[in-house]
Length: 298
Image 1 (spheres, rainbow, N blue to C red):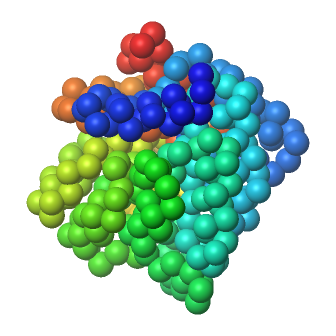
Image 2: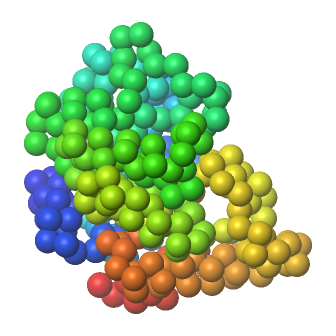
């Protein structure tokens, strides 16, 4: 499959109202981690997702690894890679350079994110003096530099630094106006939070496909991080179910798969335009959810 064919696939799916099924990966910091990543890539490849995305570390900390791994996925697999790009600690010129690297690697779909401050999602946002302040500006820059399909982030539970949900909806609409063609949400655990987001976005004129992001729980230690990352508390009704089995790792994973499968089924049944799985570079739980929905045989 050529780069052109891969890069055209997502845009075509979204234009025709089809569903997109995808996985997020991150660049590991060690050789051992990279070997594990490639095992995950090969296991996910057999599921024939619409695309896989590769994250871009805070402050460009994984820039070279992100671009290299994204390029290798484009060249060595049948998968369509989507590159991440953030505004954090980067000048406009540095951002232009990364966009050029993606283009040279045949990557024509980019997820444009403001990115979290180095101090974490809730830390004050301070843009680089020669950089970009908001994600809609990043979208506009990418679109000005070539024929790219650009995606953005959306937040069912609200952005950690946002005043309220209506502000989030206006921000998402501004990203659409700048040229964004789809959005992927931060992970969440209640379908109503996603559909409320879609309704708010539409009330502000935002009609791009919003793909729900999901993360199957694989261990109880993850749960304490969810509130920090997503900006909302882990649902108490689910927390109670995990608490009673927290010492049984297998039972926790099984429940994580069960909850993610049920949520996925509810989302798709009510018209969500696909699913995006945050894999943490592990394929087992995600693949089980994917296949239980009958997606592995697409």
